[in-house]
Every structure is written in structure tokens, then in C-alpha cells.
Length: 442
Image (cartoon, rainbow, N blue to C red; front, side, top):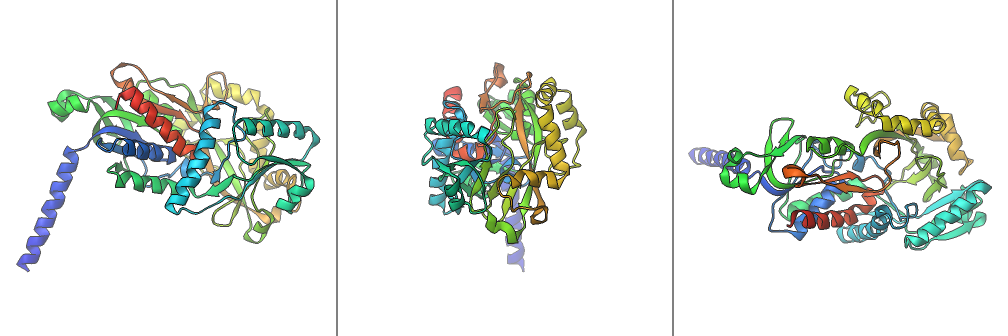
């Protein structure tokens, strides 16, 4: 008994000592804020490049990849849509190849089920052909235009005049990919601190952590619970909160984030045979979002949608989720009203479809006429962190910036990383690591 008590006391003392050492060693060369797929990919790349340095990931939730990374469609995009020469185009094509390679290496299941972008009206065909040319400029592999018979050969229930066939488009569970990034990061010596909501960043006084640490780790990052870590540099990958973290750090509040909720329908299990791969509409340049599409999932289900309506809470996944702060942030921003006025009819149509199931099904029937209201159920939702400028324009490309002064010069903000950020995550991570090395002289 005495020996057992002795062991227990020694164990308790060891735990207390470990906790004390952990508090004393809460100093890192670089802290990455945000444990979504982009933040985890960036942290992983940084620690692999600089194994002698200390890295931490700070996440406000208890789970990783809890928001956009865990609420997306799961598509591995091929890079067709994006403006040639843009970061989106470059990083998506690179990222898709890296994603497939990474999944193969780690044994993460995926399906290269392909995608058809289908023209159902004559006036869509010129836009479809232009999209094909854009895809070729972006070096997307395997693209070809196919006719009505070939559409039905690939998707027996789909009707269309012409389609762009993208055979290298795939699907994967991005939450599983993000978790694998986290494991790589920790195995390489990185630290992940969950339940750590960053609410303040400032230059630390030398006395705050001892004069030596105060000089070596001059930035203090505080959580909503009063916890602190000290670091030399910060990278923020905060998605829906990227603008607020930028303001906290004294950097520019632009572009602003306005949340848009996307609601999905799901095909009933007995109807999933009607969809084999991804089926997308031809995007209309007059509208800001892609429109309804059919997306098979790794679990065998099929998601339909999403729509796009203003969310009244940045993490508002349900229709009646509401935050006064988030709501006022959005509606008092002039950029939102300019966007609304430019897209009033589209916005009203989206709101109507959000309320009436039959209106959403009508959109789906343009591609698969056999789908009926009785074949679908309301499904999950996601919230898109849409960056808007003050003129009401959607910020289409990735945005990376920092600031000036003692604190701003030590921070790199990933300000806008919309779809296809999950597909592009490994390529984005390489770019962030290059930028960190150049800015911070690691």
C-alpha cells in the first residue's frame, strides 16, 4: 500500500511538474491561429521545414476542423473556374495533385468520380466552351466537351445539351485530411492548444516572461479565458474571423467578412443511384455563386445544393441562429448593401428557395427531371466566409497580408481563403511557408 501511495504521489508530482514546465515553456517561434484545414496544413509545412523551431496551433474550439473545413461539400476541385494566372487557379491545380498524392501516401480514402458541368439551355453553350478554354489555360488535366449521348453514358439520369467533362475531380472527407495534417504536425514536434480563443495580441513587456524571454518572444497572445502564450511571429488562418483578428492586431479591417449560409438537401438513400459523379450547372457571370449542384459523398449519400443566403451569425448553421454582433457587423457594412443592390433579384430568389423545398427541386429537375420533392430531405448547412470590399465586390482570390509597426510586422494574415481552399490546402501551405520565411527571416 505504501509503495502504491508512493507511486501515486510521484505520479501526481510528475504531472504537476509537467504542467509547470508547460506553463513556463509556453513560448513558440510561430503561433498559427486557427485549426481549420488551411491553418493545420500551414503549421504542418512550417514545422517540416523548420524542425528546430517551436510551433503552436491555437484553436478556439475543442475539435479541429470544426467549421468551414468540416461543413464543406468534400469536392477535390480540378481548377476549371478560376481566372487564369490567379492564385486560385495556380494553387487549385497544384493543390489537387498534392491532395491525391497525400491521400495515397496516408491511406486516406477518396473517389475520383469526375464532374460534368452541364449546359441545359442553348445560351449556356458559349459560356461552357469559354469555361473549357479557361480550364485548358489553367492546365487542368483530361478536360473534354461531350454531347447529350455521352452525358447519359456517364450519368444515365442527367439531361443536357453539352457538358464539360472533368474526370480528375474527386471527393474526400476533408475533416479526415485535416486530422491527418494535425497528426503530422504533432509528430514533428508541434503543439496544438484547443479551447484557446484568441482575443488579444500585443507586444509583451520584457518583464512579462522574464527579460530573456521578453526579448526572444516579444508577442503575447491572450485567450478569452486569460491564458497567454508568447511567440516571435503569428500566422492567422481564422476563416470567418479573419477580419476581426486583423483588427485585433492593429492591421487593416478590409476586406470584411460577411457570412453566407449554404443549405443542402440530400437525396433519400433509395434514390442515390441516380447520381454517379458531381453534376454542376454552367456558372452565370451575373450571379455571385455557382448555383445548385449534385455532390456524391464518401459515405454514399448525395448532397444537393447549396443555396446562398445571408447568415445572421458567423457560425450560424441553422435558419434561426442569430448573433446581434455578427448581424450588426454585416448590415452596417456599406459593402454588403452595394452587393445586395447589384444582385437583388438573385438574392430574393435564393431566399425564396431557402423557404420552399419545391423551388429548390425545380432547379435540380433542370438536370435530373426524375427528381421529385418526395425524393429529397433537408440536409446539413455550411457557412461561407465571404470577403467583401467596400464597393460591394466579392473578393474572388486568396488574400495574404500583414501590417506595419512592431506588432503588425510580425504577423501574416490569411485574409481570404474561400473554396477551393480545402483542395488547395497543401499548395497554400507551401506559399504561406515561403512567405513566412521571407517576411520573418526564419
